[in-house]
Length: 53
Image (cartoon, rainbow, N blue to C red):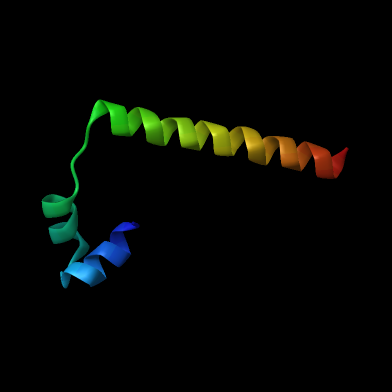
């Protein structure tokens, strides 16, 4: 769930409260998110090349 939706669901008035209470950082989660970013970048680059080529 994105953080703004979670903020709304939990009734927090500021997103900082939501981030401090309901989120937890870990190496595994960071690695998972970076893999998604890298995958997105590769996909976007391939799509751009396909459209221009």
